[in-house]
Length: 90
Image (cartoon, rainbow, N blue to C red):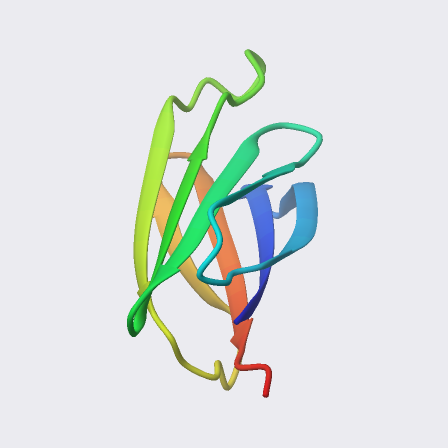
């Protein structure tokens, strides 16, 4: 599953990138954090951590069902928002 990730503070885009979640454990580096991910059955286990000191977040854990997003989805984390768009790749 391909997942576009974006980190916002209010309306300001802080970081954005893409990960490919598969059965293999992987880590991708973004400018402000690391994304560890692995597909476990019908769920993508995604952990965001090692955030920049300027962000101040510690760890975000997403147990994301494999699915096709119809639009951006988001999770509010205080003054930050993690937005994502999922695409199932054949």
